[in-house]
Image 1: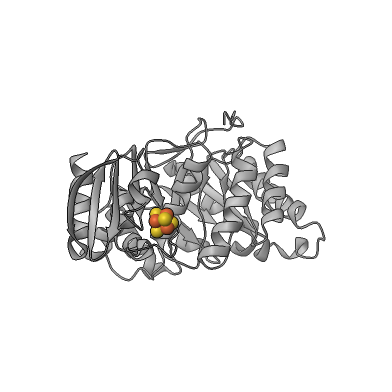
Image 2: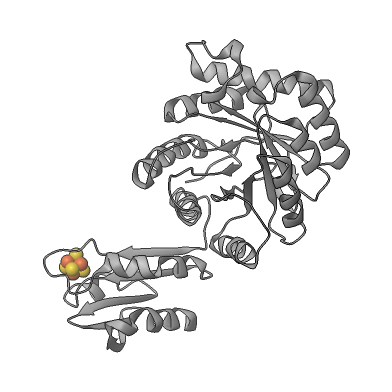
Length: 350
Ligand code: SF4
């Protein structure tokens, strides 16, 4: 699929460009409270980077957390976004640190002068702001509007007016709802009128399966016509699954190449190897490998190697053994308990 991306301004979130090109970046949000900068936290961030995370957002709910967030900004090269609600003073404090981007929800920051103070300081520090409009937290004067998508665009326009009055254009917008049609329509309406980069995704999309379905459908509607510059797939699940889903969506739409392609058998009465269990053991390792690489995880020796002969590497079960193959040729038979290690070692060779 050849997609011409809608022209947008380019905004720099730390070292990461949002908009202004065909590149669509992947982001997620840290899911635990930020209480200290620990080695585990830094390792966790690095782990997300290896999976493909390019921008990471943290909730910063109070001034105390803003100090920890500030310290974290200096300890990682991952561009970090501070997510701030209600209290504009937190945003002002965060801007004293090397934060890559601020996310504020205009519906709950309060009086326009508070937003203005944040914007002035962000301008001074050259930090972009994402105006994140959520259908669930529209400003009071718009919450009764029947056309939800339109109300979201109006909410974005109210904030845009403040930004423009301060000659601030270093902004990304998002218009999100937990309803995919409302999300898609709001983004279509916005993109028709404005050239700000868009962060797209369905918010509060639910647990893994419904969340993936809703986000994939919404992102397909937008990305396939060139709308959307950075994506987050909100799931009631792990950051890792959000990142992997983003990668799969971009790969399936032909908007990002070079990654890992996994072919795996759905299992049937012939299955001698639990492919689902093996994939749970190994999939994060697979997504950390540099691509392009096609792997096949097959359930039986009858059809497995044949069905997966165009894969770079494959594994299939045979009793309590597994067979490893490379480009359709068997290279080794080993015990099931060694399967993960041996398969990763074969992939690393490739
Ligand atoms: S690879 Fe084997 S176990 Fe898997 S679906 Fe095909 S025939 Fe069934």
